[in-house]
Length: 397
Image 1: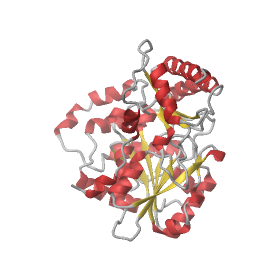
Image 2: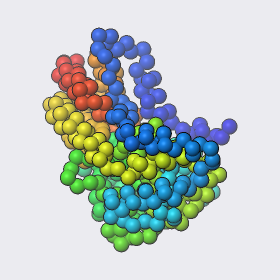
Image 3: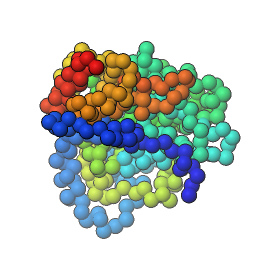
């Protein structure tokens, strides 16, 4: 067996199952889960219609690069969303959801034969970043979120000697779990570090279309263009339909950016067998071409967060995020695992302890004392969950 498999950590939900084993939830209450960030709004009808109309595509092998029509649909969406004009043939590549692409990019980029090969990621983080780095044979360096800056990542915690060994940097904006959006000056700093040390920036932007401010979140490619970096050197952005269009089961997204990197990435993917089904391609073209369902989706999230956040702020350290569909809430007493166990036992409510989303780094676990609440169900269920949270934290322990 590949010995690098032994370096992988258990996934957060596996650890949560272990930590809650033996707990008997309150039987009189319907189970509610705010644990997994799985979109649960209905998928738009136009996607099902596109799939039904593309059945003939099952009779042939799809190309790994996708059809020109799909790449052009993605490029057109990028132009509408960010005002950028990309070459659909060389700067855009469809992928089977951002998760598999975020993993695969490390296998493409990392050269483990170089001493001290390092991948930097935020902390807390999406665990695929870490697993991808470890299986590529790299070390992982963690940059902790800063509570004083709305849990934005403090990249200054990474010393120059580590940046010099870095080959890949994972960025998540809007962030998971905090929802923080990186401003332009922070992008400029990361681009300068990339220029100095030669590492690739993988920008995970899967939450970019769920936001609560008037202005849409700044994207990595958009930031690069504003700073005059129109070739997107050493930058690849990752975007998905899962959250934007409520189709996590479709497994569809794209990567875009540095044409030279995408050429190598396509080579890797051709051997890996990463071609997207023609049915999924047809559905993706329909989804990227329509904004009405995205606006409706965003409105539903805004209504839920407007209803739930004030309730929870009476008992938790929580505020409306910049974007995303999570609330990153500090719990009284600071024991996130105990809170998760208590909520399951007493109120049949599942939440994810923040400490399971992070690693001990720079002397602390930056997720400790917080819980992640995924407001993915309908408003009524999210409100019921909020009332249970209020009851639990208002009751003396």
